[in-house]
Length: 102
Image (cartoon, rainbow, N blue to C red; front, side, top):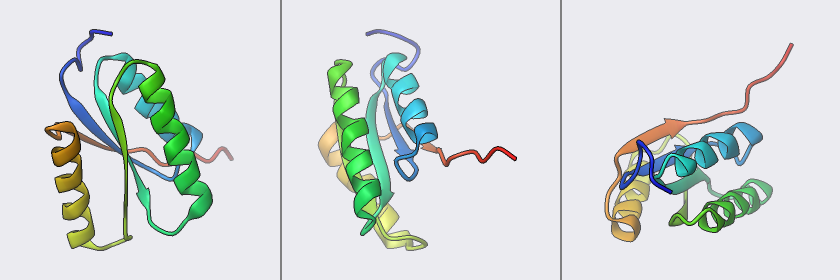
């Protein structure tokens, strides 16, 4: 699907929440390939990341899952390098945490 993000790669960080999924899917629908990123060691969140990645593939876009350690700059740098190695580039980084309703 072509769109304003066609040919771009977006890294979407979050915990596998609905907000995370919504941002990733919207960017894919706009034409981007997507790297889904989250924290290492949170098994339920990692499963959600893979589910989102599978949804992106089903939309016809490439996707990968990367995990990293919280507050660890080297881990973030490694994640970016992995995305570049797997998807060829990294154009956009988005942090998509869940929004709490009061």
